[in-house]
Length: 314
Image (tube, rainbow, N blue to C red; front, side, top):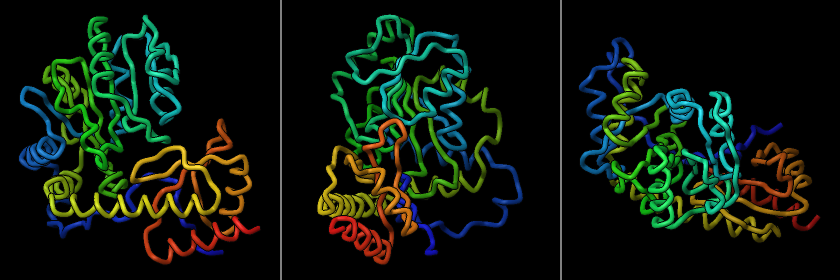
């Protein structure tokens, strides 16, 4: 069988080139100077405003799991469909979670609302004014609007980072998706300094590896690579969208890192792809949907195109 072509993720297939690393990074604990360099680079890249703060995690998943455990059980609203771990982690920590499909449906009792922006898997976005008004309401209830901006690197103007820290907002940032280095395990949480200070205490020392600190600082500071990559991803996303449309699939959402399609024949197409060792993302609760990430090499693009053409003329 051919080697699997994994298109089930939303990770950039054109990763940041890992620079040569000093051997000492593997041999000693991470230094405070290396961590400070990373946080400075992250603050500049993400547009962290004055009086806000940011801390690093060994992957955003670690932050998603920690946050619910630091808050008293309360009413939590989560905009769905989205990344399943948000609801799972808040429920596991004893919170009363209500999954909603529209931002206007946030319950009056909810003190915390969580959304992914742009959303995974459909790329849904919201007006800044709508999010700020919701954050204001939640803050009046002594709560938070938690925004997971894992895919916002490709649409940086969507970020609410500039609206920190006084609006009752916490922002999660993923390094691995845009920079294509998911295995590095690096993520960030930004918010008011007092809250971020509590997070740092909970994380303890050396939470992020020295290797991740070093690579992350270099990547986040590489403005040339970032600009070129955004341009390349935009072109690749248009190419993927056209290829899927030509195969008779309806495009219903996405970002420059993935494309969500809808078809009553999606389960059959999923099996057809798997027969050629191509993996798309299926959704058991919505079997009509398939999400496609970006192929990498020209060979991968041709392989997907041939498979889809065989599907279209079957």
